[in-house]
Image 1 (tube, rainbow, N blue to C red):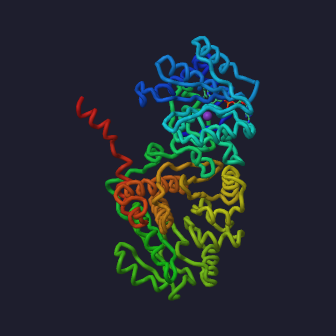
Image 2: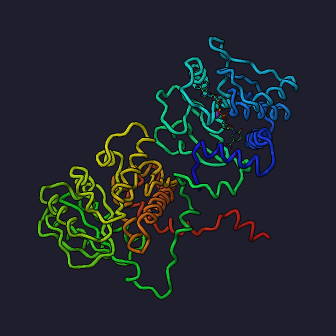
Image 3: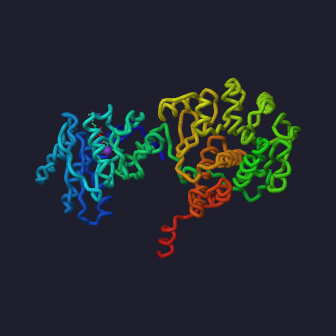
Length: 513
Ligand SMILES: NC(=O)C1=CN([C@@H]2O[C@H](COP(=O)(O)OP(=O)(O)OC[C@H]3O[C@@H](n4cnc5c(N)ncnc54)[C@H](O)[C@@H]3O)[C@@H](O)[C@H]2O)[C@H](O)CC1
Ligand SMILES: [K+]
C-alpha cells in the first residue's frame, strides 16, 4: 500500500473532485459520514458526552460536518471552534452555517478563555489541525491540547493528531494532541510509523472516502507500507522438480568465544526460511556446539580457537550472511577486510561487521552491489552519522544507500527498508521481539531468501515481514516477556503458511453459500 505525502493527498483531492465532478464540500461530507459511521457503529445511540474541538481549516470542517450528523442522530455533543486564525476555509464556513441553521451554536475559544470541563468518561474528537499545519501551534492552543490530555477522556483524532507536521518532528511534545485512536482518510501517513511521531496515536485506522483510484494507482510514492498482499505478490512458488541445489547454499560467517549462539540462531533461521543448504563458518570453539545441536548445518572452522582470523573456505555459496557474534578482535578485523578485498558473492551484513565498516568507511566501496546491511539504531548512527529527527534519518539513509548501492534495513518497531530512493515500511512485529538474538534471526532469514533467488531488496522486505509475523504468531503463545529469538524461528513456518491462509470469515461465508 502506498504512503502518500501531504502534497500528493491534496493533489488526489483535486483529481477526485474533477474526475467525479463533485464539490470539495461533497468530499468533506463523505469524510464526515465515514467518521460518523465509525462512531455510530460503536456508540449505537449511547448518550455519552461528545466534545468536538474543531480548527478553522478543512480538518475543522470535517469536525463540524461530523457534529451535524451526530446531532441529527440524537447524540449529545458540544462543539468548540479553536479560533487560531481568521483565515477560515470555505468548506469550514459552509459547515459552520449548516450547523447554525440547525441551531447548534459552537463555542468559540480564544486566547485566555476558560476551557470547558471534560469528564474522563466523555469522548473527545480532535479536529483542530490536519495536514495543513505549517508552523507550531500558538502557546494558548498548546494549552488547550494539554487540557484535553489532562481530562483522560478517550481522544479520537480526525486524519492525524493535531499538531503533527507530516514532514518533520515536532519540537515540543506538548504541542501535539495525544490520541487514543486516529481515523485517517484513505491512505496511511508516514508519521504513524516513525518512532518520534508514531507515539502520538495508540491506534490508527483508515476510512475510505472514495479518492480517485486511478490517481492513487498512477502516482509514485517515496514510501510503501508492506503487508501480506505486497509480500504475496513477490513470493516465488516452489517447483515440483526442484532439489536442495535449486534453493541455494547460504554461508553464515560469524561467532566468537561466548557468542556462537548468534551464528546458530542466524543459520537456523536461514534454514527455516528455505535455504537449500546452510554452512556456518566459525572459530574452532563453535564446532562442537553447532555439530551437536544443529545437525542440518555443515560447519567449517577457522584456524583460530576463539576468533575468526582468516576467512578461508572451499565452497561456492550463493550468498553470505556475515557479522553476528563475530566481535572486533584485531585478527577478525583484518580477516574481514581481506575477505572484502576478494569477495564477490552477494552479502548480508550485520552486527560487528557493520561496526567494522563504520570505523573504516572506505571499506563500504568494496561491498558487492545491493549488499544488504541490517543495522539497529546505534549501528545505523555509526554508519551514516547523527541525524536530527526521524525524517532526516530517512533522507540520510536514502543518500547513503544510493552512494554505496546497498539495501539498508533500518530495524525498529516499524522496520524500514531503504533502497533506490524508496522506503518500505513493515507492518508486522511486536514489543516482545525486543530481545537478544532476534536481529541474528532476521539476518539469517534475509540470507536464506537471497539464497533462493529473491533479489536483495525483495529478500529484505519479505524477510522483515515474515520475521515480524513469526514473532506475532509466537507471542500469542508466550506473551511479550517470554518471547525469545528461538521461538521466533519456530514461528517462521507458520508465518509462511499464514501468507496463504484464507481469511476465516471469508471461508465460513463461502462454506455457507
Ligand atoms: N483527501 C483527504 O484526505 C481530505 C481531507 N480533508 C481534511 O482536510 C484537512 C486538511 O485541511 P487544510 O485546510 O489544508 O488544513 P488544516 O485543517 O490542518 O488547517 C490548518 C489551517 O490553519 C493554517 N495554519 C497552519 N498552521 C497553523 C498554526 N500553527 N497556527 C495557525 N494557523 C495555522 C493553515 O494555513 C490552514 O489554513 C485534512 O487533514 C483532512 O482532515 C477534507 O475534508 C476531505 C478530503
Ligand atoms: K486532527
